Image 1 (cartoon, rainbow, N blue to C red):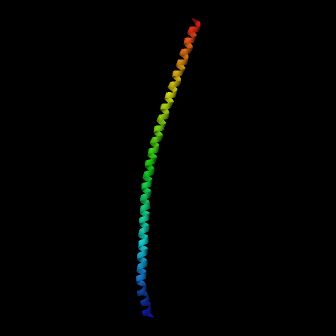
Image 2 (image 1 turned 60 degrees about the horizontal axis):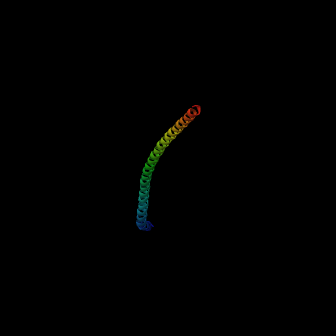
Image 3 (image 1 turned 30 degrees about the vertical axis):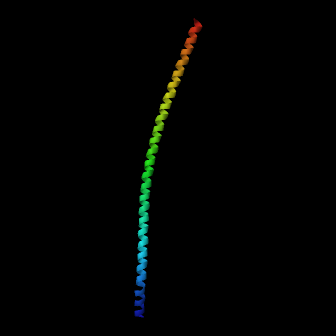
Length: 97
């Protein structure tokens, strides 16, 4: 029986070696995919950060534009009030003369 156990062990060695090699290949491929996914995530994060910065700049530009529009609308309102007061003054001067 000793020889048969040795024969079985000798016969199983190549199969075990093949299984170990397959396992090693699978593990290395898993490591590569996790490394690839980590690098992809890093690239995605960098892209997201760039996009966030661009959106922040766009918001800032829009806020400046809104401030300019508010200033222009206030200026236009003041001009309209001055014109209205001028017309009223002119009409009053014409009415009392």
